[in-house]
Amino acid sequence: MPLISTQLDYAERDRTIAVNTYTTVLRRERVPHALFATYWRDVHGPLCSRIPGLAWYVQNHFNREQDAHLWPEIDGIQRFCDYDLDGGVEIGFASAEDQLIFNDACSLLFADEQNMFAATVAYALPKGSTTFVDRSRDPVPNGDDGLDRIHVHLGASHEDAGAFGARIERLARHLAGEAVVLKLRLHLPDRYDNAKPAPPAPDVAHDVPPERGLVAILELAFATPLERRQFYASSTFKTATQDLGQDVAHATGFAVSGVYTYVRDKELTLAGLRGSRPAQLIEQIGAVNQTGEDVRTLIATGEIPSRA
Image 1 (cartoon, helix red, strand yellow):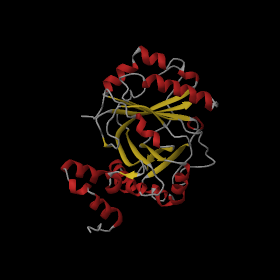
Image 2 (image 1 turned 135 degrees about the horizontal axis):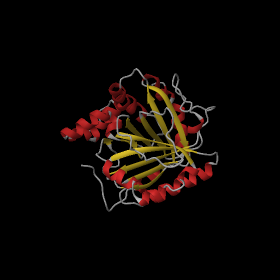
Image 3 (image 1 turned 45 degrees about the vertical axis):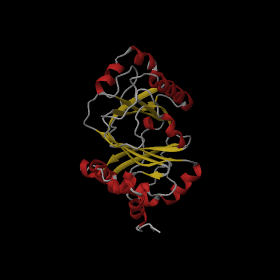
Image 4 (image 1 turned 30 degrees about the horizontal axis):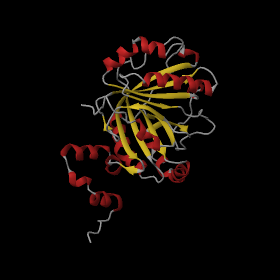
């Protein structure tokens, strides 16, 4: 059962991430999905977790096979054309100075992307992202927590970034005020510039078409798909999205199959230290000894702590 609270809101815990990036990822066509997902979680993930300066690292894996009702049709808004993704990644920092430390060392990470990614696009969020509501008690999820989670990517209908952002913020506040919405996190990145491809990973595509230059991403969570679709059919949702097409031209929803947290508040999670699947095994079998500081130190440094 998902660990949710109907009384408490844990949104405040995300405010320590002052600078953020949201990166879309598309796997290489001839890398089987199971191999891709395992490599991303258990090889690439722990590597990224150890890059200095990092304060926040979360992989959101997407399920391309889930139903087509992730976001309803709204007048004047179309789906993005030819837009398939296998995930969305948050890499965040406690300060701009920490981000510079990360950037100086990240070539070790980006050299690995070509092994499984065909395309990655890092949208910059120099002022961070905003969690409006989060009723999930687990601060470091590592897998499918049973919630109905989706990411909705919205593309602007015009070039006015200020007006687009203000409209999406109004939408986010409206939706977050409804009890059925268990999580709403908003990413309003700077306009992406193809002339400055990011991240600078070799042999990986980083360009976007014009309609994906100025975007916003809504992270939403509901208890079940049924509650999600009932909410979309409600007068409350219709009011919140009235005339949304004046500022939004494209919208596509992606189903989240799992959320994997490797770093929070500059601390490695068990998944960050050992890999996502080993961390799940440790939790499932109840291997308390594997979570002790002596084992963590041994795995992280190769040295056994002194017992003197």
